[in-house]
Length: 96
Image 1 (cartoon, rainbow, N blue to C red):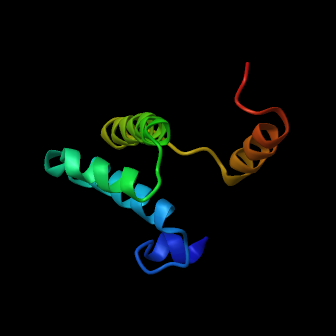
Image 2: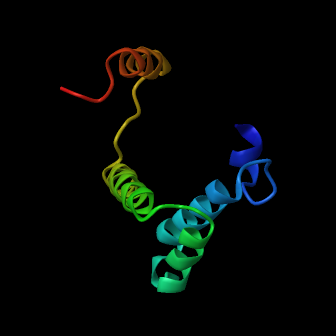
C-alpha cells in the first residue's frame, strides 16, 4: 500500500488501477484540466464506465468533506475511533 501512496505511477499495480488513480488525480487536483480524452484513456486501460462513475462519486464526497473540514476547522476523532469504526464497517458494511 505504501508504494502506491508514495507514487502510484511507479508502484507495482495494474495499468487499470494506475489509469483510475491518474483520472482521480486530475478530477481532484486539476478539475479544470479534465477532458473527455482523460476518461477515454481510463476506459481504454480497462476501467468500466460504472467504475469511473462510482469512483467520481466517492472522490466528490471525500473532496467535499475534506474542503468543509479545512474551511470550518473540524477536529479529527481520536485514533481509537477509526480502528473501532473500521472493524464495524468490515463486519457490517455500509448498509443501515
